[in-house]
Length: 495
Ligand code: NAD
Image 1 (cartoon, helix red, strand yellow):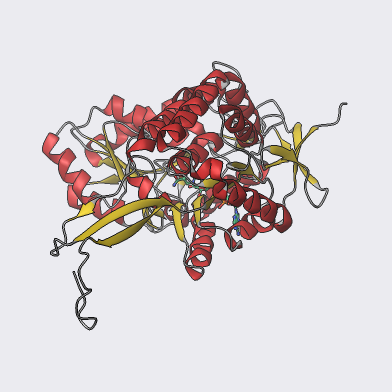
Image 2 (cartoon, protein in one colour):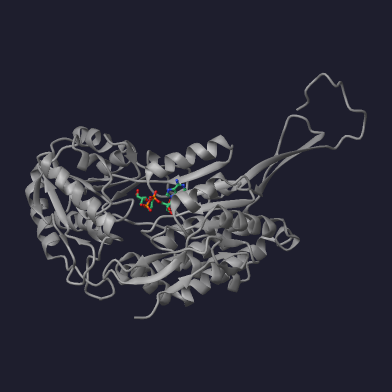
């Protein structure tokens, strides 16, 4: 058997072996086969990467680069991602077990992230402020922050990195990325493509490794001007505290336990498809998973039947095969976590209507059956805590007020789905739901143009759209006295 290939960090524009000389394996979750060994990053690797990023930031080549030109580089990077889409989709699918066709879909959209921020690069500008003193010119400038740290999870590595990297570069920052220890490969390839696109060495750096060994030193590095994190709420909370202690900003995209609500006036067939898409797509490993399903009592039985019938027919198997509908969980611990939550739900009194078992998918991998839990309520841990797997808890309700209260009774506030044909109700629900994204008669829709924000324990700050540029810039206010006469009374503040 051949040795797995080794992946190095990417620092200062080139592959860089780890300071420790150590590597860790990353396996294909569908088969258990080791795909590669990645460099095991530590604080010294992080220090080298932050230093390279700072050097690139301070370099006159970067400082003098026009915003228009920065946009060109981002456009080129988007084009290169498009040209390499198949390779990247395949690599990501092998690494985290997501369906190849889903990854192809993500890769088809990913260039738009870079193209969108390419177009925005020369539109970052300040204002002239009309203060009350006509002799003073006051204007604002949006400046880049410096070195931005980006820490990402394993479920959609390139897409979630794109949400950070594209706006960070657009705003003129340089970046150090610490990808998930479960998915190092594609982000390293992305950094190579950034150099190929023309970004100077050090503008995009990647240090691979574990959270405590490489992620924490990145957050704690005094040279970091900002941290942008996507991952679990528990880790996000620690990162937010560390960033606040050093007075740097943090953008946090965290966990969810999103409600998907089906009203009695909904098209139930469509709603059932939306419920299935919300929780079984990507084997439930998405932050926006619609894991709590509320169905009006008048359509509860019909919805249960449709969803459980579809769940039973979902084809589990090789994520690379075109007809597979459900791939593995990303690694064995994740499968065990899902299994333990279903066991917990059973012990709390839930009934498993369908699914409820781990399987190797006939491939030796770590799969879990699409699972529908009933006889559940908002008080159960399996209904309150994020499972991050293909497990739907379906509950009946009687009134709109009741379902609003149930849907909002959660620590999270990432997303929500509503299925109704009543236009007035659609708008009412959008207003009443305590979630950063509300979908009506659709689920999982997303665009780099549309801002998204997690409410409550689902996050802090905005990603996507023009809004996120504020997260990657600082605002300077400049006052110019245009009066050449004597400076007036020093003991009076001037407007
Ligand atoms: P995680 O928090 O365990 O890890 C995320 C990243 O943080 C990894 O790169 C990890 O190495 C790093 N990390 C871990 N401990 C760290 C520390 N002490 N300091 C610095 N970095 C550290 O999350 P995960 O299991 O990889 O991802 C799943 C979670 O991500 C779920 O909760 C999911 O909801 C969330 N997520 C959120 C969004 C969103 O946009 N809101 C999108 C995708 C995933």
